[in-house]
Amino acid sequence: MTQLPLDTAAPVRPGEEINLTALNKYLAEAEVPPIVAVQQFPGGYSNLTYFLQTQDQRGYVLRRPPFGAEHIRRGHDMGREYRVLTLLQQAGYAQVPRPVLFCDDVHVLGAPFYLMERVPGLILRAATAPTLGLSPAQLRGASEALVDNLVALHSLDLHQTGLLQLGKPEGYVRRQVEGWYQRYQAAQTDDLPAIERLYQWLVKAMPAENTPTLLHNDYKYDNLVLNPADLTDLRAVLDWEMCTVGDPLMDVGTALSYWAEAGDGPFEKSFNLTWLPGNLTRQAFADRYAERSGRDLSAILYYYVFGLFKNSVVMQQIYARWKKGLTQDKRFAGLLLGIQSLSSTAERALERGRL
Image (cartoon, rainbow, N blue to C red; front, side, top):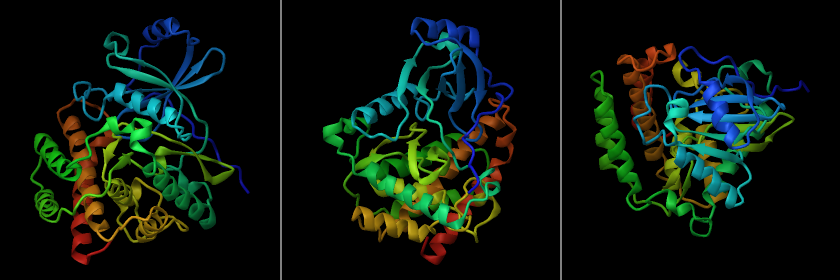
């Protein structure tokens, strides 16, 4: 079997450089060895992730908010993300990187940031996974492990672990629907009737809430570090910026909204690799989750549509920053077409009445 590559970083994108002199001065006080090389992990449209190599060959990962979004506290709260990792470590959940330090002094890098240990492994990214020669059996095992780990996350005891403090579960679904619509209105740049229709349907069709659990809220392949020798061995879950407490099917719906299938459009396929042969279908994902968790997923279409709605709004927020000139990242210029594609996907799902 071909040896699969570990995830690697790339040169820092122009305009997203960090002040290494200021960083090393701060880290010296925390007794972290000097950083001699900085690279950036590819992908992602939200918080920025850097690979730091120390003088003694240690590897760390630094997370900070995107440039131009430092004033947006929700979704870019580095202190909260650091606290999530700390609580998960204390709860005995092994699949998270060890947090090292948090810095809220904006004079160091221009925004709060935190440092964590790097977990080496394979990250399956949409742009590169099709070139790795992965077999259907490997992808079947990886997709099943992904579902099973989501079930494990949702089984953590909120009270014993202290994780309950991360959110307010009562009324979570309604707050999410209304909150994401308000974010859309605040970031709106174009007339998008499908977003309006989806919002109205989500309000009218809202189901009764399930018993709350911890939610990752951005659960997908490129936020997972896998063992390259065994893709069923999930080493770490990354990007906890949207973690909270609420209805677990909201987490499942968000994961399914990323889950492209072979017959889906090119945009949906561009940001996940789940359309490759061997992966579970969306329905098989939902069925396995229901079997392993014991939860009723008869209303899963609602949560899937919400996930697509939310992803559309997230892209709208990013596109609005690009349109205002607050970010120069060229990837963001075409997001309007992505917003239209996802909202159309949601409406087609409602028309056919299934995932």
